Image (cartoon, rainbow, N blue to C red):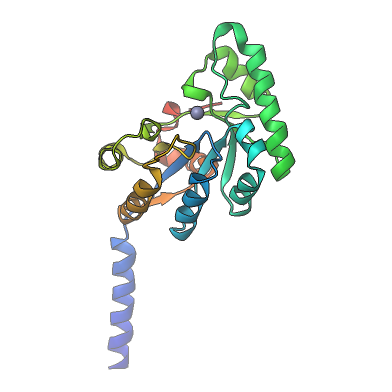
Length: 225
Ligand SMILES: [Zn+2]
């Protein structure tokens, strides 16, 4: 009888290994913050749901709310550079843009002790010259694959539907923690994170996602350098 129960246990453990779904990786990203109201709410939701994420902070806001950047860092979230003034690229101002990026680096480094390794250009505007400058500065340029358009106060249900329809292994989802109120983002997160987990998605930082590059095969669409 004992042998039988041992065999049964063995069979069940083999079965559970075989039916385990393969893990898929995605990165949630939050731009333009920190925001005094929404960033703490978002941090709480992420923390309670054991979800990793990356915050592309704007230097001006980091300067205004350093304790929130510190909280992001202390809780283990990744922090990227999103310029100091949300500077948009055009051909003429690339040097000024670089100064703006440097200024954001200095502020973030003062708060966390680390210079961000990731850069996200405001509005995703970039070109080969900027990409080269960023790479030379030891950073990677990170875009996204799913745009929630939460900043435009898109309806919560629409955002959730958009994510459900477009998410796949290797997706980088663009949210904003700095939004002119009211923000749909905290409510969206409360619903979408448990859903994503139920679909075998592991929520990781952008750097962690890039570590799985070989398995996801979608990096070309969001990652430069
Ligand atoms: Zn932005």
